[in-house]
Length: 447
Image (cartoon, rainbow, N blue to C red; front, side, top):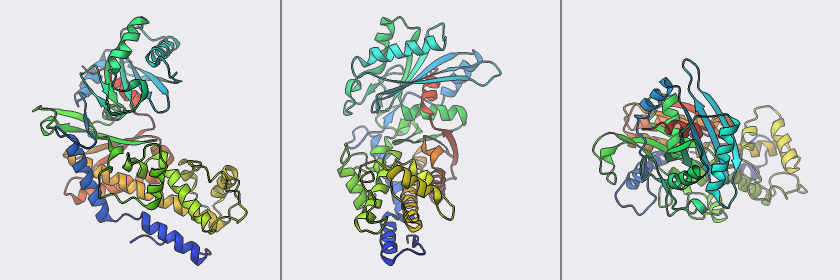
């Protein structure tokens, strides 16, 4: 049964609509258990030899990467990591230098890429980074990760899946294309690994929190990876060891009867640039949570149940104008919710009453809790698939820093569901906002 969100001082009509929304967004324990089992089946199906749905992608990265990293530490090595964000046209480069007895020295820099001759541009930015930080001599190992599913064709190369539309990177062997321009520009660099961001996050997590078996990214999007017994992966045809798996969690739900999107979710999907895909991501990820809240607020406005009738609705009427980061402010616990009022006035030119502020805060809380519980259920399904004796789950991404209630609810939900499966409760660690670029630099040491 959904919580009662009735607000003292609100009208009967306001409380009725508020609780109708709460009932629509409520997820029962039974439903969460179904989601956990469904995610388990989703990942399992994705590892089959032939699958008609989204595939889970296998990496050459194994838990033995920690031994390669320890060897690099002893040799006081230097490596480079690179994250290619195809959606934002952004490139992040970092270096990591190990010095005996000291914490590693890490440098980071962000660049924006041209749309033309993109690999030439990446090599130019790489040269600028190496020169500005006086790195060398080479060859410096470079680990590359990308925000798209990668079919790792070898330990040194990976091809962006050919069914993914990502401009100049589509169906391209990243190591080969980048390696060619690196040679052309005589850079002291050698590409040694190419992975998806969530695999690099798993590497960073395992280096920082030993025995990590599952990594979760809570960012603009969502994804998870884990270590799987190779013998349990039909399409791998291997018999020993464990390998890293990119679950492509964002795409879960496209063919599921377990997830039950609301009318607001259907509206968001219909108006999105990728209608009909990334169903789970649209329910839980940073990119979409604020937009769900905005749709709920505008429904209140259409019913004339919030804000003065002459309130300026022009900004709130713009899609994605209610940023997910605003939901942190909505955790305001003061009696007058001053911070909530200040944000609505500064961001939307709306002077909100106390009841209005309480309604907006309640809507944010509902959306946050539903998302967090669904993610917790997904994590439970992946933990079950990982078959670890006592799973260690590391979480990375900006939501870990800007929405603590989300993270707490996610971990609590996952632990409860995993215990209900008869498995040991997982341990959770917070890796921070950007684990994958450093993870790429660490993956560069893979042998």
